Image (cartoon, rainbow, N blue to C red; front, side, top):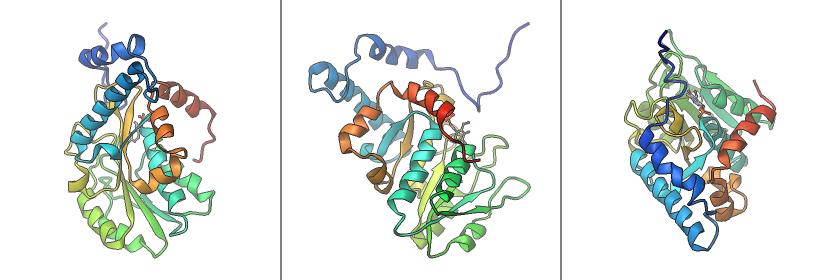
Length: 253
Ligand SMILES: Cc1ncc(COP(=O)(O)O)c(C=O)c1O
């Protein structure tokens, strides 16, 4: 019997050309991108070239791209990073009833640190009403997090409309675009988003490196140690951290 794989929203096979492009970095060109010798610098150049490619894809500056161990980690990074960095400005998050657990659990975690979370409802098509987001914003609201496309029912949210509301209110806007990348136009300026999560293994990339578009507010707190910590983070060790993180971290939902 021929097996047919129909779960491409869960993950996709890595394209042979992606595997070929990455292969040398697992064996011959394995230098630490923080090392000052030529092998380290070669790795660093490769990471920076990849960062430039991701930036070109989503219309942001290369410096705004942070590679993470997965879409889950990008969502956690965005939500916890902004909330912890901005906790003296507010303690309220607005999200929706249709988010991925990575967003819901990260919001639940922030509740344990004194944040309130408002969950906006969705209609029978899985769509959120931007008016509900607007109504929920208070003087304490720091962050709105809404996914671009849903992983189960495919609902596409009115991101540009919601961003007009968050911009006017001066509230950070995070978009989980993990299911949208490769299917819908994803341009951070056109969408008007401050933070965006994406995941390479959903679009024929490796099940190792994913990417988050960050706002300096979130990196300021999260990447303690500055540039070196950030560069060290962006190494193949991601893969292992991702696995161990999933098994050992407490769950908040
Ligand atoms: C909408 C959405 N967000 C986040 C994730 C988590 O991504 P990852 O599997 O890369 O951790 C998924 C994965 O299915 C997803 O569909």
